[in-house]
Image (cartoon, rainbow, N blue to C red):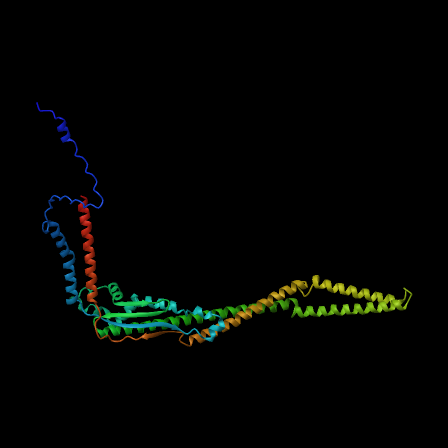
Length: 416
């Protein structure tokens, strides 16, 4: 049996006694040496894996190859295009005296330059202008000439008219500012002379359109003015005929003058009544006999005058006047209505005459015209197609598309 540990063995197995604290100012004992730690081996050299080759192959297919094809086409097959520029606006003569007299009636003739600018902007890009210029310049033959070499920027020889209009909107660029009314034009063509010719033709056709709008506005203004004048003449004739019929029926030329005459009679009776009253008062003071013939006669005269005044006043309100038996208030109201109708018809007639004179004045001059502030010039160097810009944009979008596709692919693969 193993020997049991004695007191000495227990003392040996016991924990060693704690060291007494070092005295202040004493030197610290040296730190124990650390054991050597084992380091992990260095990472192995990176190697191309299968996914890296796939990513590189997709970059070559989706980015490098399309960009090389695009750049090769731009710098080898794309034909030079020359740009002819022009600038114009629509001006109008709105400071005429006729416009001030009418208070803006001439605006109905269509003198708004903003509306004309909108119409001109739509006209330049319309199929109508393409049809007109195709007869003058043969647009189809020019834009389809280099189709065998440059099929992308050139028009197909067998293209329909709608395709020609769509190609026209690509080679003719219009910038229009509604606040200023300025129209900037840029025309692209495969040779400088044709670009200048097309730009000049656009300016001429735009001037023709403005002239057509002028002619139509003048014709409309004259037609409206003549129609208004005819209506005013008819209204004035009817008003005068109604007034003549009234005078014929009532046998009174002017009821107001007749009324003034009757009023004068009433005023005269009142004056006579005042004199009779004064005479009666004088006789009453000079005689004491109430049966004096003079007093009786004066009293009788006063009563007769008062009866006549009452009868005249009653005739003003209820008495019959003329052959139709109308009273004075009704007669006066009817007459005043006819006078108002005649005055209104006369005012309308004068306004219609003024409008017709203004329309004739505007028709005799050019109220709107095309002001060209940049005349088309023959370009000396080709500016289009902008090969560096197109190539840079193509490279940017190819890289963005490739990066997006790669991220989508790897995000789906990691989820599986």
